[in-house]
Length: 454
Ligand SMILES: Cc1cc2nc3c(=O)[nH]c(=O)nc-3n(C[C@H](O)[C@H](O)[C@H](O)COP(=O)(O)OP(=O)(O)OC[C@H]3O[C@@H](n4cnc5c(N)ncnc54)[C@H](O)[C@@H]3O)c2cc1C
Figure 1: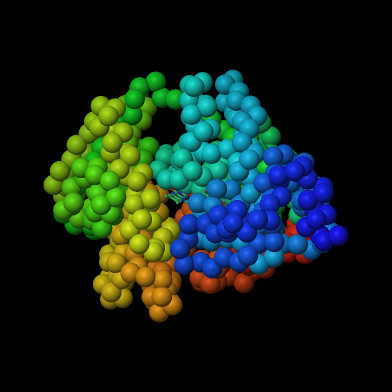
Figure 2: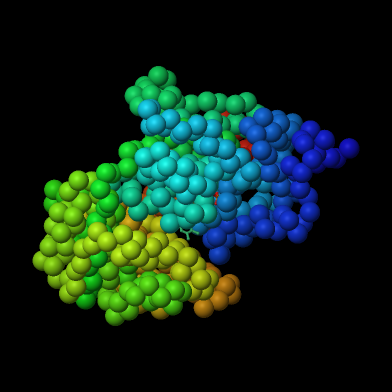
């Protein structure tokens, strides 16, 4: 009996799939230039116990396992490896619990971020991490990449909203980390260790997440149009230095504005060099938005507006949320994800413009500017090897420019396969050695998502 037949026999019918046509849809994520292998099988478990069975089998047979959520990743982290079993959590969609008193929810890994948000909204709460992919990405994938989003500038990234995890280890044992209480310093912070580990240390099957009460009043949205990109970068530093805290602070450059408008008409100003779009929430929302608008005027904005009208506000935020999808539709892309200290944002934007000009590559930049997190997106004409190599060299130059400014090669998308080569410029030998030792302790045979992450 083959190893795959053995696993088929250990799982209920329909969990394991070997049909190449079905598996084709699970071979890669959204990173255009990253190669993907051919899996031996695709598993779609519906319970933690089934994930355990798969991992015990994989350990027995030395089979590589690639964990997968919805495959919306932008670094090739969920791409198949030849001969692997893809373990896709998409059918683990139960929200096991929502507790309005403790303000926590327990969601299985396959729950779509926006479904969790809708479920808790009904009880007067919200789940802050809101990646641009929130309608299509899973909580498990968000945890595995420590996903960010637009609200992070005020509420933090996924790590800041996770209290505990249920994880299946490489040997099939189930590890439960953290606690339901807000404060907990018992033992090492294993929850944090697994958050952002990109499927290399264990398979997340459920997360206990922290919720927040919905503000009693609607948020206020502001928009400012700038005649120069550098001024838009500078205003972000000015806003964050003022004693006002937006709940979103986003930057959209001219190329991204036009990609959004080409994709769907949203009535953005196609001639603006850059837009700053954001939101303020809480009892002083409108006052805070007006203060931010004033700062934008002082920084040279040629148009500013604030609104609490729900339709107008939703329209502006929806336009920003469309940026990722619009850019993915604009052609083959490399979506970069650098982070820099906010004080270096304007300088970094100038450097990206310089790199694009000299390398003759189209780069559209959008980003969570309030976090210093930018997505310079290389839009390519084709995926020919020379185009690809040139694009990757340009992407590397952008990453190195971010590192030299005290920043990072990835603010929220993760290393995946795409950024492995560039990581050595950010992490030194000692840091890599510590990573390797943690991996060896948890997955001594290197079965979980090898070749991804560091
Ligand atoms: C249009 C668009 C907009 C986006 N906007 C943002 C954004 O604003 N912020 C942001 O952070 N990201 C963004 N992303 C990237 C992506 O959506 C996130 O990285 C997301 O967290 C991936 O979730 P997923 O379920 O699709 O995971 P996948 O792509 O399936 O997997 C991502 C990584 O996590 C691992 N993994 C997945 N599930 C598990 C699990 N249960 N246990 C262990 N490992 C697992 C995989 O092995 C892989 O390494 C965007 C993507 C798109 C396409």
